[in-house]
Structures are given as C-alpha cells and as structure tokens.
Length: 359
Image 1 (cartoon, helix red, strand yellow):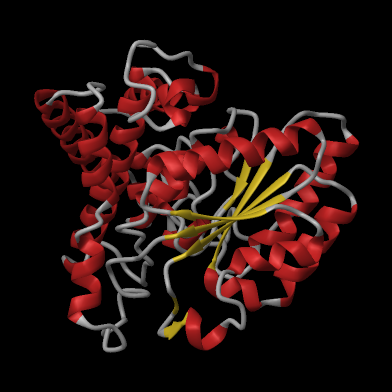
Image 2 (cartoon, one colour):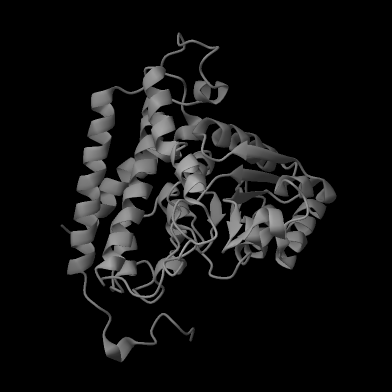
C-alpha cells in the first residue's frame, strides 16, 4: 500500500470530521429534550465520523505502545488514552484553514485535525516517510497542510506560538482561528500568563484549551495550582473561562463552538478547561506510584468512547452493527498504516543533518 493510497483514504475520513461545524441536522424529529443541543448543529454522518476519530486515536496509541514494547519505537512517548473526546470535540469545530498548536501529549490532537496515521507511525519508527522525515519522533508531529503547527516538547511552548499566529491572521484580515492545547502543568508557566494577556489586549482569535488530566507528571493540580479550576484565571485577562467535562464529546464541542465563533467574530480569546484523565502514566518511564488503583478504575468507568457510543446509539445515530463496522474499519486502517511504516525507508546516514538545521 503506497502513501498516496493512505492519503486518499484518510483525507476522505478527515473531511467528514472537519465538516462538523457546517453540517445540518439530518433528523430534526429527534427528541429535543434528551439530545444535547450541540447535536442539532451536526449531521448523523459527522457524529459517526467523530466517533471513528476517537477510535482511531485510541487504537493508534495502543498500537504505538505495543510497538514500543516490541522495540520498534525508541525514546519515549506520552499517551492520551482516555482523553479522546477532548481532542475530537475541539477540533470538530475547526475549518481546514484554522490552525492548532499541540503538546508533548499530542497524538490525539494531530489525528483529530486530520493527520495520517501511516505517516505518524513512520515518524515513530524513524522512517523517511514520517512527518519529520523520522527525525522528530513522538513529540514533534506537525502537518502544516492541515493547520497542525506541531507538538512541542516544551511545557507551555505552544502558547506564545499560537498568539503569534493569531496576530498574523488578524494583521492579514483573515478569519482563521488558532487553537492552543496545553496541559494543566503549563498553566503555572510564565508563557501561559503572557500569552493570555497579550491575546486579550489585542483581541486575537485564539482559543486556549487546557486539558486538565489531574497531573503534571506526578504532581496533582491540587498540590500545584492555587485556584480550584484553571478556567478561573481567565477573569484576570478579561476573557471567558469555562470548565467542561472533557470526557463528554457534546460538552466539549458546545464550548468549542462558542469560543471559536467568538474568536471568528473578532471578540477575542477564550479559555476552555477540559477536565479529563490520562489512563496511562505520564510517559513510558512512569511507574505510576502516585495514583491509586481505585482512582484509575473510576476514570476507566467514564471511558469517553464508550459513553459516546452509548449516547449515539440511544439517539439513533448509530446501530450496534454500525459501531462494530467502525471498529473493524479502524483496525484495518491501523494495520495498513503499520505495514506502510515498516516498509518505509530509513534515512540515510549521509543525510543525518538534513531537515534538522536551516540553511
């Protein structure tokens, strides 16, 4: 299977998710009381594609973890298993021309914004067909063609970059919005406060998204952050701050739609705090001794993918066989992507520094 085949296949899937913000409801007769209001803005097919994206993120990370254990991936990686609704819910509201900055835990963001899992696996495997020609690895996935300006190994490093891009968009009078993902640990970095302050002063089209998974490495937010909710800090910079259940796709998407529309109108930035949880440790070297088994199991019971499947089934957007078809299709795509990555050539020693240093 060639890269062109993978590209065509994933573009067709990605386009379905990116159409979320423009789609019209396909069944207006559904129960308006029991259905989240944001679903009335989405088509049934768009919701199914969102579910597929969440499954694709989960299986990509599980497969990447397995490849690491088999010695196919070197270095480390930071998994976002359990946080899929946050990434897909936010990116679902963006246009292809909008931009995004990510974090060291950014695989889900990349896939949600349209990255090809085949090229991501190739990057993980250190191959030439990877997004960074195999030079960057897990923490440096970037795809400018889909508006993904890249993951960042520096905590809070994407925040000032997003502000700079948003300023550029405003100066060019373009209607683009920039989303900046960051973790709860970054809210105590100086870059966080500087970025929010500048974005608010200049009313820049930025949506700041704090994915609060409870821990910055092994330190809980209760021990590291003075305020109860990171979103409280928005008031200091004269912007809306909202806390949402990051495991609830509808809640995340509704908050994102509101913030993106505000930014696109020229009314300035917003801060969304998406409360979620990473089921795995901070990184592959994390022995996970700071969390109890009971805590992890409690969050496992709130699996965002299972919850989204149940809700879509309850509302008649997808059948049991439809869910199984999505899972089967995702498994095929992951298998094809791994095969593509394994077959991709390794960089030559003679070109070791190519794409690393600028001319």
